[in-house]
Length: 79
Image (cartoon, rainbow, N blue to C red):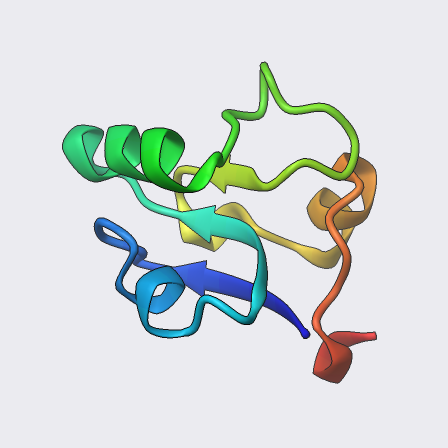
């Protein structure tokens, strides 16, 4: 199962549901962003390779097109 998380904080969804393949997180605050990168391997857009978990900042900018262009799979309900 593919997962996206918005207002991600320090990774509660990832910790609670480790069986989900978390591919996109959105968080604007500096400290939680650093935790998500270190603990869960999310990559900033400028350092992300196709298919790696993406750490986006402003959740209002996340679109299907952004995900597709970055190689982030869409969750089943969005396909």
